[in-house]
Image (cartoon, rainbow, N blue to C red; front, side):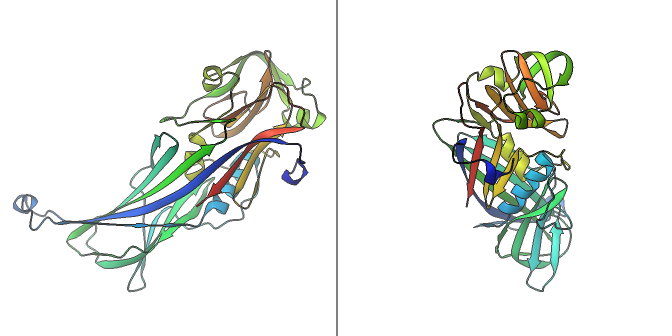
Length: 321
């Protein structure tokens, strides 16, 4: 089930995701005494910002395949995540993130903020920077910029790298921005068995497990007979702590276009993660065939195809900068 074998009759729901970003740097005087803390002349704050160049989309899609389909990662792998600073003297400094990135879903966009702080007494002039994020156990270079800012020994440098993903679905699929990860898929009762309900043998072999008494769960129950994609897909692509997933053939990418698909099997197809492992499931009329888990938390997307005749269904996401 490779992407180039899907054929012209495939039904892919199309989504465009434009990735942009910029770096903000703040310099403030270190407060050494209570008097200086309130002395505005000494406690000067300098803020600069500059747009970045997105460089790591192919590496991110490669890493996505690694944790969703057990693929082998072939992209760049930096020593550690954070913001790498190149100084005017040729020194390279890596500042680690102070916490996990902050996610802010707003309308049709998702904002991801990565923050680092240098409160040492080091002095240097930064001339260029690189953002390194973690995905599938790899430290992936995402973006570069050339912001020039000088830090003195009595100053604290704070940098926040902001990545914005603007999502534009077609009329056939909606975008759901969620502040926290949401579940989906189908919950069933009873003992799991081998899938025998799928129409095609290839679907049967991929979605290997089957359960009965299936009821839509989470977002799948809130959006019945709907196609949707959730902002958590993008947060997990740009930063996650997952490992290599189980081998399957349900994702593919070409350049910066990602495909998530399945042989047409049942009315609903849902994709996401469950307890750190990829989960793919198809279900209808109380029956579910799935890989790993039928309940997904978080859910990434859902496709609803009640009368599909093409052999494959799925989502096509085109990333641009």
